Length: 154
Ligand code: SF4
Ligand code: SF4
Image (tube, rainbow, N blue to C red; front, side, top):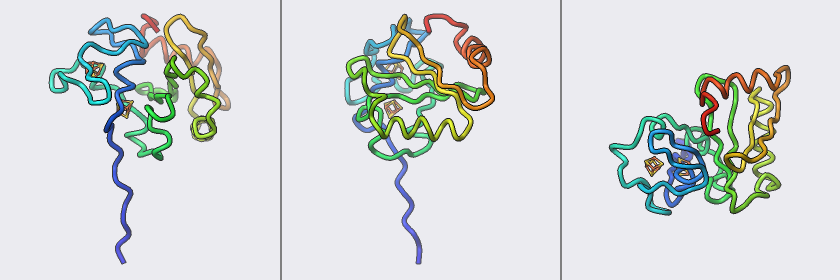
């Protein structure tokens, strides 16, 4: 008998990644809704969106996470750094305690077991916490971040 596969996650209704990260091409500050975003709908310039928006990878979509980890539900965007064993956990500043949510904590433990380090942040200039994977150093994680962001506006 054929088994039903889980439907692929979609953004439907979530626009958190158009709010929390910095977008260099647009000089969009962190924690500010992009001028091109229609809140809870999506990008109004989707076909012409900047490269960093195209490169962005949201774990909820790529790994088809459970619905309770949808960013606009759990208030955390898990973003994978390109070519590095590091995730950013960008917390919606309107919900600063979101790391206390057990589904978020469990996801962080899962990433650690998969040997990813996690950098949590609630915005530019805020304290960033690094949760280190086994056998990794802070310096190594910062080196990856420096390469990915050239430490500009992170
Ligand atoms: S954070 Fe993820 S689910 Fe939400 S709009 Fe962005 S890509 Fe879609
Ligand atoms: S350009 Fe579009 S995809 Fe990029 S942050 Fe703005 S609304 Fe989001």
